[in-house]
Image (cartoon, rainbow, N blue to C red; front, top):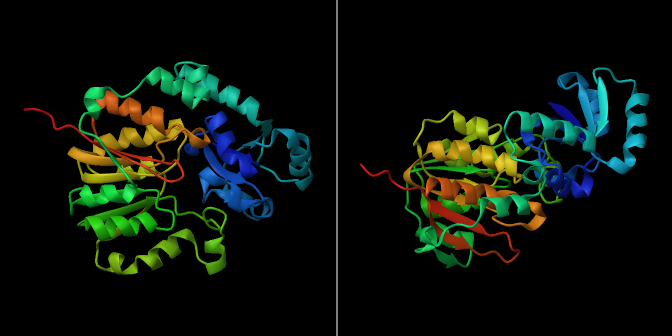
Length: 318
């Protein structure tokens, strides 16, 4: 585990470039909280870290702003804080991390580790056989109208709950599990909503869906998505919507759990099936589809290019 200092407005590009998995970061320090995007809920200011530093166990601080490395290092040293044994730059950490992962057999080579497009070329395209019955839909909401109703549903990464509301209204699940980090955050997409409302993400979401929670329909599950999903029985869910971390390593970890927890014939909808922002969603999803022989149902268009892909798991023949 490491503490990461300084990503700023380029956080997504940096996280993708260095393939930073969320589970290896204990906390991110960045004074411009609202711009630290793929890790909402893990970001605190330097001042807040100094106040709370005894809560964190990491002994290595990784400086993500490489052009401000010396400046930030001096700031850290001048604070006199204890418990940080090693201060290194992100390039050195990424190199050490890559070597460690290669030794563990988690990466094929450096190109696969560092570049989602190159990895996608290695994984290859989905075969036409798995696309024969696929339809193009105008939006991700259109898919919900066509999916089976009721059953057990999980949304992984809920943000403000706008899509949660659509799932609840259109699919009418018997049980709906809202899975998210639900950590401290000022708000998503730079709008500071939680800060303005003086509520945490958990409190805000719980308040919005209080009626569903009271009725026993909606259950909030807090934690890393792959850890939360691991706790459910296998073949438990009828439908899962995945919109969590978008780096390749994290998507792959989510998929490992999801394919165990979805029923035979169950449906998975992947958000942000795109190369925009350098996401690793496409190669991770394509690999799963090919290995599991999953059936592609819908490709859902989006005005901003962040498409959804909806797939159905094959039923095993007796």
